[in-house]
Image 1: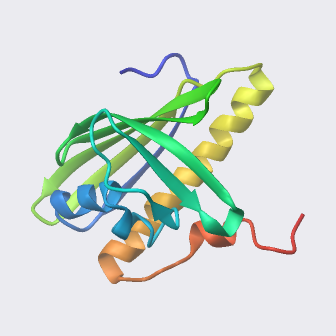
Image 2 (image 1 turned 90 degrees about the vertical axis):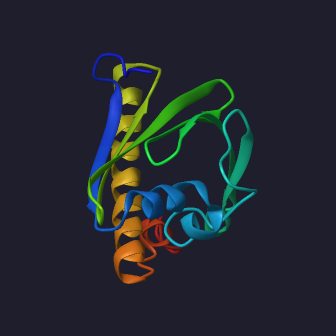
Image 3 (image 1 turned 135 degrees about the vertical axis):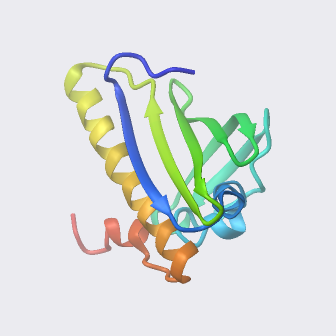
Length: 155
């Protein structure tokens, strides 16, 4: 699953934890909810749908896991039914206690302004997710980055 042209968002981060812990953090909603969405209907499983909910925004999303290669790669499809995109995580162990995580979101459609907006929002979002994952996994800190991105009271 290759990203076509330059119509993709990308975020990357070193997380100083073993690859198995980092991978588990992205497939297990009990952990992911500490730094991204507030609840998930279950662990990611290949060829299965999962529901992710951001309760603070009153928003839920169905994701379909297309690829799940333990400690290596996750590929999901998500979005509105008529505008789904692919999200791919790659987990590269640098040594037994360091993992480099790369996330790409591809398949954006629409005119160039819409695509630029989607790429910018996705890049920002996944950068916050990776930073939150790093803080939580390395230091057990809940930074609330996704929650605080759109605080109540701001238009």
